[in-house]
Image (cartoon, rainbow, N blue to C red; front, side, top):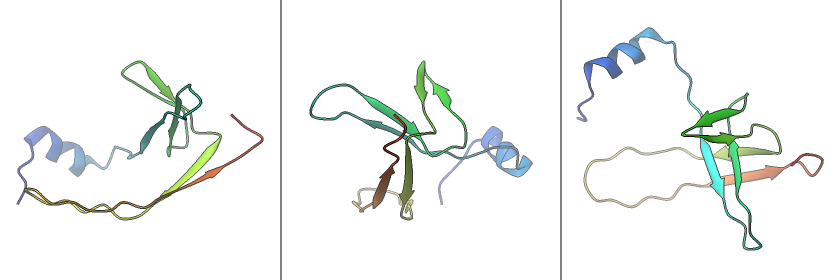
Length: 83
């Protein structure tokens, strides 16, 4: 079992939170793309992650303790009309 703090337990019990994936992509040609799977743009640690331009579909995550490797499949669907 994984231990969590009392404040995290209270947040989960409240049901007043959202989950979003944050992606930072650095193309070979330069620049940095920051996107989120959320329905709105998110700013985290001074970086704005855009919700437009791409849609991400990912597989299941597995939470384990100790050393173990896993594979995560992510499909990126880019909208060419948006940046």
